[in-house]
Amino acid sequence: MNSEIEKKMQKSLESMDAKLQNIRAGRANPAMLNGIEVNYYGAMTPVSALANITVPEARQLMIKPFDKSALKEIERSINEANLGITPINNGEVIILTIPELTEERRREYVKQAKTICEETKVALRNIRQDANNEIKRSEMPEDEEQAELQKIQELINQYNKMIDERLKVKENELMSF
Image: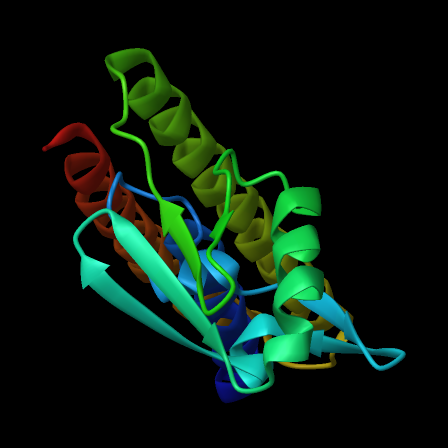
């Protein structure tokens, strides 16, 4: 049972990591385009499947589509994604220049990261609650029940510590530069 609980907690942590990765720190990262889909011949397709995404400079992304006819659609999808970046289409490639972050914007991103981490902690508490209820419903002796509840609490503490560490790393990344 503990391995099942730990798998759920690990999935929550992985989800948090993916969300934190999408918070940009003033430098270009191809992961910024994750989740952006382009209408390519009637099918919604991720940008990464339609183009090469490279980082020629620290604050620049270059998107070179495999099929030049998709250039306009990629540009439109990026505009609709509200990244706060205006794509520049030169007919061959699309260039995204990431603006320098202001102090105020950095603080907003830190706040956003804290919210994501707090949501993950809530998800972990929900997992713990479900597991505790399951243990209490089972017909095990009281001392075993207490031992199981203690193991789950230790697991929660361990995962909360990991979340706090990752938040601290992301906060440092966002506030430095």
